[in-house]
View 1 (spheres, rainbow, N blue to C red):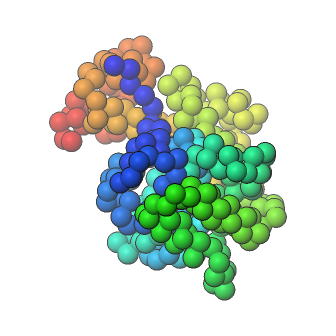
View 2 (view 1 turned 180 degrees about the vertical axis):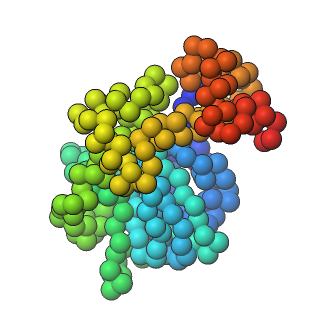
Length: 286
């Protein structure tokens, strides 16, 4: 069996009570209990919206961590890697949908033109306290999803379109000039890291892909994330190794091979250096 990278979840990973449909809605607090595997880093092959209604916590998207606060709305496009740390009082509303589902009624480039789905912009919008339209629409989406009707898909898609259009109205026309480029470069680095961590482990490799110098990439990571680029590379490799050791039956040599290490003994030394224990000891502790 061939191992994979970070999980890429499909809509089928969240089965509804009724027949499968290309969309999903649920309360955040219910979702994380029903599907506990979403609390670790993963990606999706669909679009995700999260409206935070109560509580605190953090939401990390492509290496960048954002604070949760009531009135914040997160927008994730397919392929983005994310995970959250939720406070005990965190509440919210989640909506998933496939691109095909949306484009069936609203074809063209509109879905891809929304700024919050563009990696050049932050994936979060903090709504003003006076905004009273978007939250009720999320509630309507949930009610529609949970109460099937013959025209459920059309009504759900219409509410979804309104959410995106209203969010675009509130979203800043341009990101802050001093934050846009660094955050964009960090997100690009995160995406490249998720794609190439098995074969590229030097800062220079990623700096070249980003058309930056290695020193510039390191300085950027220190400034935005308070970590060096090399530390982030090692963390990504070790995280994947820990996932394979915890959730697969692969032997240590097989894990080393899946991660691109030609020498299993070197992988053991690498893992011990950056994880503080051996792969076998880590597996026994799980």
